[in-house]
Length: 247
Ligand code: SAH
Image (spheres, rainbow, N blue to C red):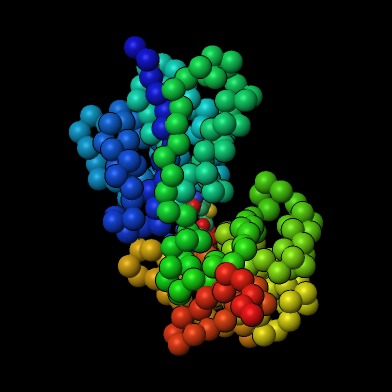
């Protein structure tokens, strides 16, 4: 019996934004591995399918568990929201492969992409990612705050549009405010900022403001923050970034 492991992205929330490839992989799996409450919310229970729910902080354990199941012959789907390669489980799986049993490198492992939060958030407001952009996670679980500050400074200096993932949590209430202060200093108070909550779920809430006005406490764990480039602008009720400088 040969097992397999697929790491799927379920998209931002709306069922229509889950790809058919992810849907098929979920239907074929004998075992689903993922964050418990999340699994229950996005995937209907199916007979005979085993769910291995775990909490959110033990990604590497979860990855090892999924690999061991696949090595034992199971058809395993590891489930991530959005895209599994963006600040999510796919990298954790490959990290576990690198550090684990060499036989794991022979396993049938593949990744199914999904619509990541920043794309769903951008679509809610127009086209703010129309020019060059970058994505930064504000979570300092896996990297230092000094590293995050260095990257924010560099992104501001290069005038990228910046998508901020993991902007806030109960454990880190002050960091988004510090990030905004740093960016305000570097980019000026008129720079547009979008706080998009629950993007691509059908219940999105958009707050469109500026670095001079933004209130960091308005963002939570389900918010994606987009900080505009110098060219990012409003037109009617939309926000967009031109693709280049027009003559
Ligand atoms: N793999 C995911 C990201 C995981 S990091 C993806 O590709 O989207 C978790 C962060 O993603 C959250 O803190 C939030 O900033 C963002 N996020 C995830 N889903 C979101 C949604 N529907 N709306 C807005 N932000 C979301």
